[in-house]
Image (cartoon, rainbow, N blue to C red; front, side):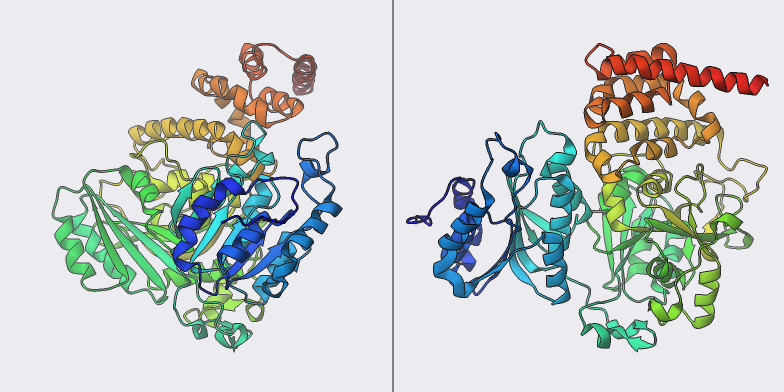
Length: 608
């Protein structure tokens, strides 16, 4: 079928996609589908939907002002957008009774559709080519997509030579990772086409209130409690894992799922897990044939879970019954969203006898960190969190400044992460990561989205002589881990730096100027020790091959300044040359001279 006979067009970016669309939509062609299109131009894709789906209703969102390439004289894509809009109107006029044209920016239109509780069976994302726009359009329209609905993400391979921020692929990748586990991929080439396999939890909204009124009543049932995912990662802890599972079953927050992973155990863990899980439908058990390491199993789990909040539960630890409700309440009532919350732990011996109430970061809340929650009448309230508990939570919760270096959080089980941030920092370069999950996630997630401390004991941390991190009670005067632990931790830090540098194209635009501060954060070093850290030949060896990628992602002045802030002498010059194709640019000489002058002035001040 020729969908475009008798119509006027100046461009054709659509026809080659139609065979795939026909194949994927054929079974539903005669259903009264609701279709949303973001970016319509002259109406080719709109005409396909209106004719191939004769009973559909189509909503088209477009400013009809064009993208940068449409407004740039001399560009191969330059177009008179007034004429483009006129052609769209003329081409689609015969279908006016099934077409809704929305002429505005997509962020405004999509927000209005959400407020109107609209839903769609098909969403076609083909708007602005910038990564941030592609990410935002996909994110906002995902909530409008009905379960089992299809989303088409266009221009995935558009202009691959352009900087990451100026093309859709990094934005689409970030969206797909943030929504991992919520879709299946139907097609991946120039376009990525996915089917939504996830729907909102069926938990009762009436459990939540705002100002004493039922959330179900206020929202008409459209807003529900968040789903919490617990991930228990077990390796040869048969003697403890049963108590861990029982503590999760005892949560006073009912809207959770739990994935129990046996990570290649050789003891009788499988039998213990099966016995304690029983027939509880909230629990799923996965048996891995080999030990992927705690971090490797955590990465693996992200495609299996559906919760918006995630806690990785060490199989030798336990949760207090109010763990989930207090963490969720803090997340919902914080004045600013954070990537994760971290609470205090009760340290116990192997038999469960309490030894101390501690955190992994020494003084848990400093005076400068005080940041109470919003007033309880203005936020979502959980029924399991009493007024007294809420007041305690408000007085004992603080945001960690993103500039703060070092470790500020409790270990392992004490942390509840936003699933979207875990997926943003997930690594996939290899399957096995024999290292602690919190050692990676806490630094990376804090750098990307910040964190908050809950100065209330909400979990138990068992000390039994085989812990990877702690072999005695916490003490401000003693290191917790073994020399081997710290050696492995230093090696892991180098791999984290390499990962961030290798993915600069993806993360630079996302962090919006914060890339270099996140890099410093994951070194685990204080500001005074950063120069010494970067002078390590191992760190230099990581930066050198990544220099061209960094130079491509940052303006020359920024690249020079940031390298010189971390490296000196021949190391700095070699990295700058590698970034600029083997030669130093004139600007680099100026930046080097300026850097040397600043160092000299600093030395003079110290001598005085």
